[in-house]
Image 1 (cartoon, chains in turn yellow, purple):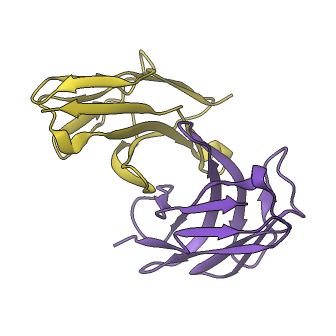
Image 2: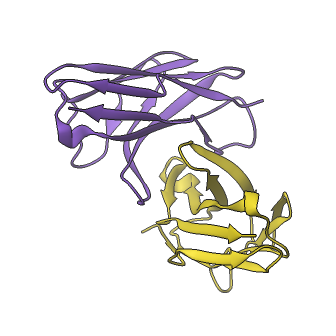
Length: 113
Length: 117
């Protein structure tokens, strides 16, 4: 079946540190992969996505590469800011299951000045 | 583009009453809407999927008579929590896919915090 395994948090980093949040997946078909971000008290916002192998999604300094060989979609940012503090969710969408989304458990990131 | 709104953002009700939550796609037609429930510090749990004009498909373990979903138009879906109890207190989030953005991308509403006393 389809599932997403995400690095457990919480993660605490100093401002300007390098961020990696690991995400691996299992899928029966050819999924699209997403990272969503949730700020405190808010809903989810699409951060970036990749729809096929070797695609790189990027937005606001974050990036993630769809690696089919390792079934991974790790999120990275070279220099985090305090405003990046949020919960990050990795997700996959499989056309074979009607585009149903499968979410990871979320990783809480806190960036301290 | 691809904005989804929810109303209300926060609601407090007494046990035994019913609460309706609206989810609207503001600038696109939402052929499919999803309702999720999120517990504190946990991921989203899909409750049901609704297509415009047809009955919602509920996930296993979700009571369809308790969580009534109506998707009457291409821009509006409602979730009614009937006879709410304290254990129904949660953060409810809707999302939509449709005519905006890349196929299959879900756009999320800001969520509704329900507290049942």
